[in-house]
Length: 108
Image (cartoon, rainbow, N blue to C red; front, side, top):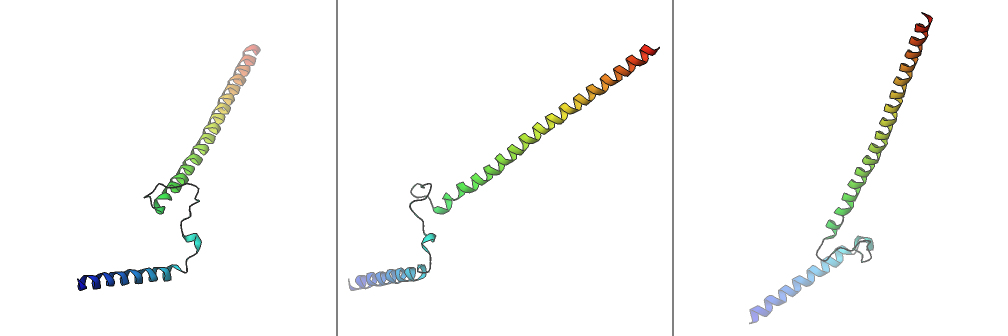
């Protein structure tokens, strides 16, 4: 019985020493290093703070994808305009050839 109480006393002392060390080592940390309860998005119980940050990285990746899609849409519009201008240029050259052909045919 005495051995059990001695062992439990040792465990309590060890626990208290650990607690003191933890307080000592955490003294230098600022209040911003601790999780706050008024975060923008609350995480469900049991989810670590490091897992919560992974959603932000996905959002940044999606931001890059949406930016790429916007650039691609602009590029497509630019290509359509270039194609239309090319077709108009071809049409103008055909009309000019017909006029020349018509004028030379009329002279004969």
